[in-house]
Image (cartoon, rainbow, N blue to C red):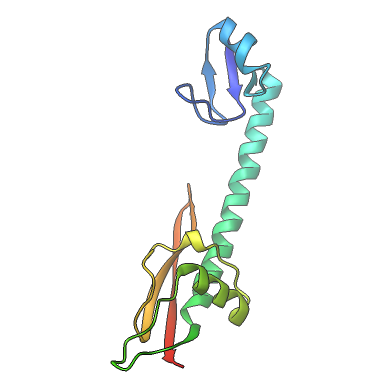
Length: 152
């Protein structure tokens, strides 16, 4: 039985693939659970239409990510931190705080999990952190944000 997978199925295939499975597995497991549908000419056309729409959406997401990356090159996120007698910073600035600073200071909303450099910033001065803005079949877009930490 040929079926089109509607979701990723472990050890079977990925979403959108047309695969050959045994009749019982397809009719009794995959189709009733909504994981697949039978492969017919109409479902093949529907799959092609969905793939084209998804490809267009991915191109749009990549374009938006490239625009954000260009904007990130020109901005600087500023923080103030308390400093001890020897000039060392108390604590550190985490990726969550940097993401919140980007949103509050510049209106750019970025998920804290998108930071490629996971280490916290714990020194005064400037730090450059890379952010993975887009990752997909079209490639990936990585932007760089400059973080400036000053003495309070």
